Amino acid sequence: DSGVTQTPKHLITATGQRVTLRCSPRSGDLSVYWYQQSLDQGLQFLIQYYNGEERAKGNILERFSAQQFPDLHSELNLSSLELGDSALYFCASSVTSGTNEKLFFGSGTQLSVL
Amino acid sequence: GQQVMQIPQYQHVQEGEDFTTYCNSSTTLSNIQWYKQRPGGHPVFLIQLVKSGEVKKQKRLTFQFGEAKKNSSLHITATQTTDVGTYFCAGFRSARQLTFGSGTQLTVLP
Image (cartoon, each protein chain N blue to C red):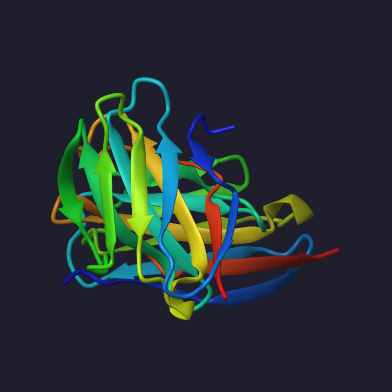
């Protein structure tokens, strides 16, 4: 158990819908990262937050947004869903946001868009 | 931008054989990390290499960081069925974004 909690574990929805994925980092970790993993794309970095502020942005679509709340949990919002958004979404956390930080991953949310 | 390439994409070995995966970056890395993802699981941190030419060992696993800090390798000696999974290298892009390689999926045949 990494200490990072992601809910829900599975999500099935239809095209055009909006969903929210939730992540609670390890106790004491200030940084949260979101990654998307699909079969043909590997682990793609979406976005990082550190202590409530956005720190880095990767290949995140405009239909996607995220935030980190004062209690440090984070939510990833996916809207106007398309079939291609079906993937495993991982949240990870680290103590700070430096380059020596190792990431602890949650178990992921498997999103299926039908 | 920085690309982290990993080869091979797939590797099947007989139990007891050795296995190596290679990671190459288009730019110099400040450090490199390795993660393992078991089937159906999530990535788990294995190790971080920081110094040029650094070599670290964890039991049957040997990790190397190239002299130019642009490549790395993971070697497993005498594979076991418990080694099954996908191995990812990862390097920081512009000090903010941890970029993962495409991964090497290892299958160990008993």
